Image (cartoon, rainbow, N blue to C red; front, side, top):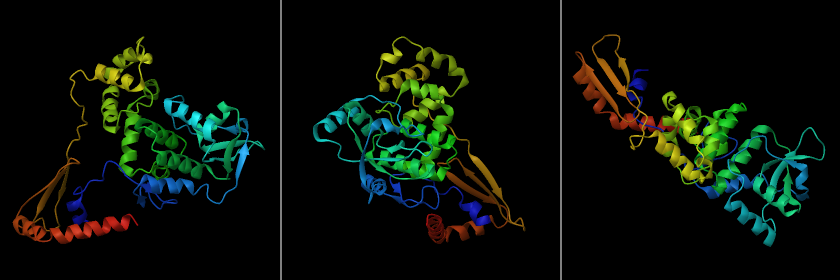
Length: 324
């Protein structure tokens, strides 16, 4: 027990997961693969060995969880023209409706479905009976493989999955993100009202840290009136999404300095039964300090110092076991 306390906080979980999880997982964020190519292959496994059929788009309903803030953009127009010219290269994935015979629900391929509907042609699809959990994982992985969802769209998708009752394991798997990344997404969505997110839109040029900063500003009750004023401005909704973000950020960040969340240092004390050592540990998430006093403090400190290499190797080994 003492060793666990002494080592607590010596390593931090990284902010961003770069890979994609294999499915099924045995713990949130475990067994992450390390490239979008591998994630694309994972998503494609849902289509492997399945018959491709032509379906009337009007028989297919939208997914029960939305993953995009913007429906009309240049990328979609380009997709429509590509399908018009050379046809639909990749089938979409749908599942039987469950309540209405002859109807389906799209799992992934929403834009290909919209394009087919706009072009007045059937959509090439794979029909697969899957449950809700597998549905959201397949939907999230396919979007992650294409790398075309912005940070805030991913965060909103994660929040919707949580509201639907899915746990962090499913959310991490669907978004190919580790636990720390999902936690940061959730923190942004908890501080930012969803009406603000929808008013700004996908903001493709705005990354995670800028959204964290905005959420810290907009989440303050003292700024509520300023938020409403900006959103109700005549010119706000005429701006592109990135500019809407910048307009709100500039209005709230009057100091014009980056906003950072301050974390109070967590202090923990430890003392053995003989009370010959008293240790105090401070951890603010970025730095960890350990100080000791009492009769055996010096000798115990030397004892620890001489075994740091072995302790760190043990720490790495135990972390690896947790990720198996």
